Amino acid sequence: MIGKEFVLGKILDSLTSWFQKQKKEKETVREILMSLKLAVNSVVLHMGLSMEHGAINYMKLQTYLPRDIENMFQIVERYKQSLDIDLSNSMIAFVNYLVGYNETINSLTMGMGDVFDEKEKSITESIGEINERIDVLIRTLEV
Image (cartoon, rainbow, N blue to C red; front, side, top):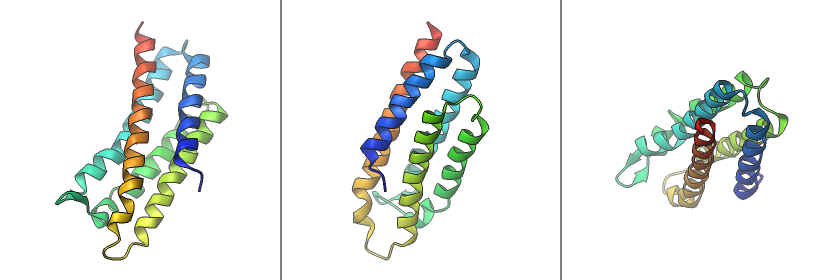
């Protein structure tokens, strides 16, 4: 599996590069950025909704995560004509990172939840950084 730092770096770089090429199409760019933000935030939202007694209930998360992954993939597909290949590929790499997390959850046995604390922190931090970049880009559109 490709490392989180590499995937995150590619997303941030390709998002900024794509934005610089497309920023004249303000409404389309805003729509795509907001769709991406909503999609990545749904993962964190559903992780929060799955919390019970200070820890994620993985059975509960399994009701959300596959749909979140599919939604992100669908956004990339829906906007593939507007996205460049680098941004599409980096978003697909992030989706694949989440697929790996989901597959690991599927193989969990009782008492293994502690193994995921670092991975969950990594996903939450990555989504936070993606959100920050999207917010900066959206503010740039408004100037």
